[in-house]
Length: 291
Image 1 (cartoon, rainbow, N blue to C red):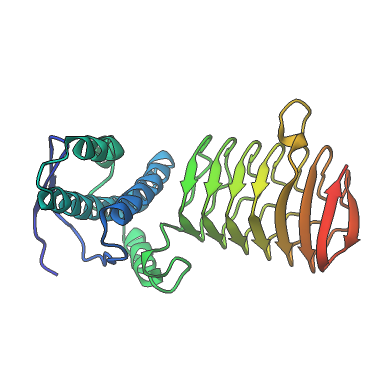
Image 2: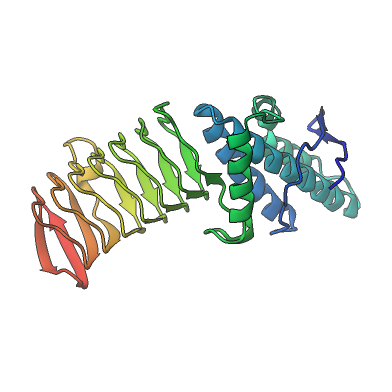
């Protein structure tokens, strides 16, 4: 594909973009609101890759963000031009929603040199349309935190596949996110939030999930052996009674002291779990785990 330079004016800032690779950019949405959601998703993914120093991830996600910004700006301008009177409030709102993108993109690399990274890029491109998320995902692929902290990170509407996040994730929020085949072994997940999120084939072995909150979270084929779900007093988490599903998960040796949640356990292993009582039968309806 020929490389075509693009100039984008965003909120008074000129962004010069010279694509450096042939990358598919699926057109999953066409309305300004849909395009803005894409922008926010790519920005969230780029923030993660920059924090862990993933150059290839930042290159790929940065390219997707630039494209999404261009399309969102074009759609927004077209919408304003259709109106009889230019809507200054709408223009200001669009600028607020996209502010900070320029600085974020400044930190993203524009080329890669390492051959192994090129192979990973090829795998990532092939994964589009085949992995969770369809043509738009995964947003994060084979990202390795290498121990770099991701405290208070926002995983917002992302699709994550084959990532290794063995690091400090305290206070991170996973909202409307899909996590598949990832490694969070030993991860510090204290105070994390799991909201409308689906996780499969992921290891949480010996992870610290103290004070973590769950709302409509679903875990399937995950390894939680010896993970700590303990809730401390005075955190507010001990008073919440949330719903979470575990399907074919290994929960042996987990600790649930102070925890109260309504769960559905389907074909799970729970031998050696402490600080919890299982009320009901595993695999049949709702199961309440409480201290």
